[in-house]
Length: 320
Image (cartoon, rainbow, N blue to C red; front, side, top):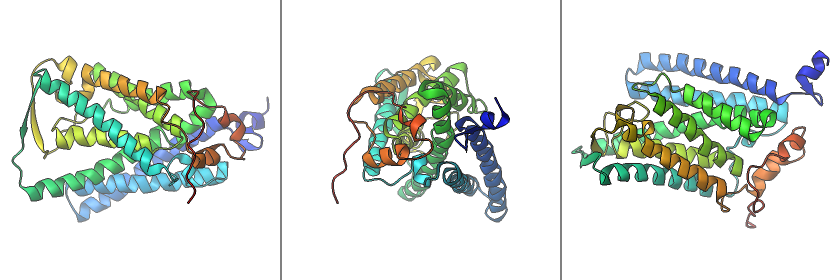
């Protein structure tokens, strides 16, 4: 094997090297965002301005870097990463929002019905609820989009081409879990759940070849968990929430100070979502995404065979 064979396939950089290159660009995007957010902090001191600018700059950097990658190596638009505005993108986003909502309501409801948690209305002024809730909505939406771009976007997609779906899901989910080891109050259980939640999110991408559904699941899970129910989110507690919660004992079920993601109830919800996403015949790739991802290109042959569930063909789009 020559050096050219090691790095190139049909005259193009092999997917595994594109994965490593994209990881470097992800790290660079975070560094750029961190430095720019620091400049914003000097002008507007405050946690909201810091996190808002950090997440926004990170999103813009990721989109810019992935645009370069898709143009240079795939000769395709950025939409191939999974953010194409195809005719069914709103439907996929709403399905994701619904799945994430059902997951978190199930966990919160189970804690309330079993007496493990007591909820009370937080007596906040309406203007505070609206302002804080709206700001947190945007913040968590951008954050969820960033994480899905990193863990289910371009790097993950190159892993699928290199290792196959099972290998890519396993490796990306493990990295996703390890990335949360620095969070406050983390435990081995919370880490295992964070690894596990990568599975339904990855399945949602693989079934649709778009990121709208994973973003919806990710966002609603976090928003309901933190702002609506008042739980800690991966060890972080928000200063305002619609409800206040007192969790009693049974940390192995509730996650205690880490939040529901550190308990068995969340494990059950995550596994239920994974099974539904894997088996549901309603979740499938749209015709636009099929053509965009598997259309004529240098990567079409190795990519086209990647399917995780046999079932109906692509979703047919209605004529305009």
